[in-house]
Image (cartoon, rainbow, N blue to C red; front, side, top):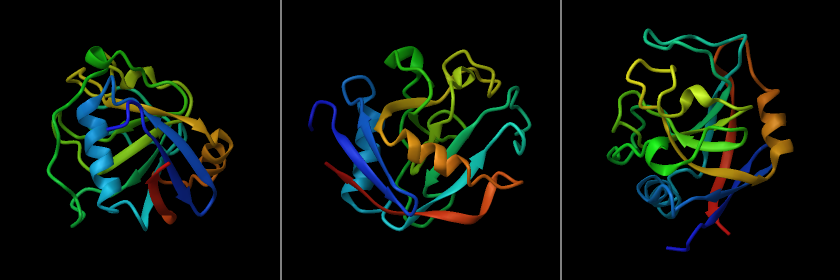
Length: 175
C-alpha cells in the first residue's frame, strides 16, 4: 500500500481530493480502499447532511454535529463485514474541518459509510460526548483539495438530515 494514498471522490457537484492516513489508521484506510478497489462506492450517494438546524439526536447523543455522510447506508447489499474500531486516542487524529471518518453505531460496526466534518467536530474524538460510550469515531484522512466543493455540498442540506435529493458519487479512485 502507498504510504498515505490519495483518492479522488467525483461527485455531481465537484471533486474532493482526500489524503488517507494509512500510517496512523491502517485498518480503517484498508477497509475504505477495499471498497474503492471493488468499486462499491461508484454510483453511491451523499445521503445525509447534518446541520445545527436539522440534527435528529440519537437517544444517547449528547451533542450536535455538522457532517456530510456518504457511501453505502446501513443494510445496503454491497456492504462488507464491519471492521475493528481505530480510536482517535490510538491514531492521534482529530475530527477537525475536512476530516474523513467512518460512521458507526457501536464500536466495531463501521463498514461502508463515511462522513466529512464541516467545521471542527471534536465531540467525535475519543472522550467526546457524541455517544455515551466516549470512544468516538475512526478518523482516517483529510480533504487536501476541494474544500469549496465540501462547502457547496453542505449548502444542499435539507430540513431533515436524510436527503430527499441525494448527491451522486460517480466514482472514488486512487490518484
